[in-house]
Image 1 (tube, helix red, strand yellow):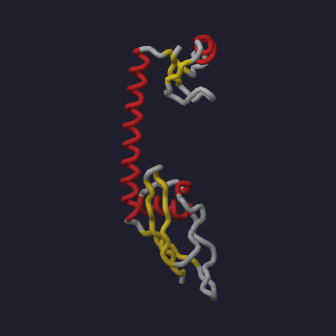
Image 2 (cartoon, rainbow, N blue to C red):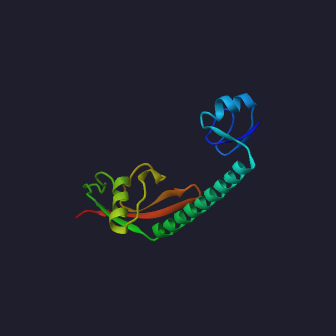
Image 3 (tube, rainbow, N blue to C red):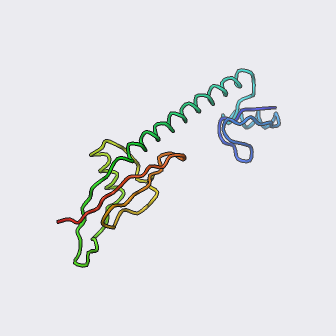
Length: 149
């Protein structure tokens, strides 16, 4: 018997896979638990429609990430840090501060977990941080840290 999986099933397949299983396993375990449905002409057409919608949504998400990356490339954020007598800065600019600055000044929301570097910026001057917006899209944002007077 062939079924379409509605959820990932360990040792059997992933969601939306069409797999061949024993009728007893399908009727007694997979179908009653909502893990699968029988493969019929109707369920096949529903599956193909769902896959088309998912592909459209993925394409829209990719395009949105590319648009956001384009905006981020043109942004330079300015921060100030106190500097000691030796010229070494005290502290650093955290990713949370960068995230907050983007949100407040540029109305752009980026999760701090998307930054490639997991540490903030602790050096004076210009630093370029990478932000992974999508698995295929990486944006670069410029952070300029100057001495606080």
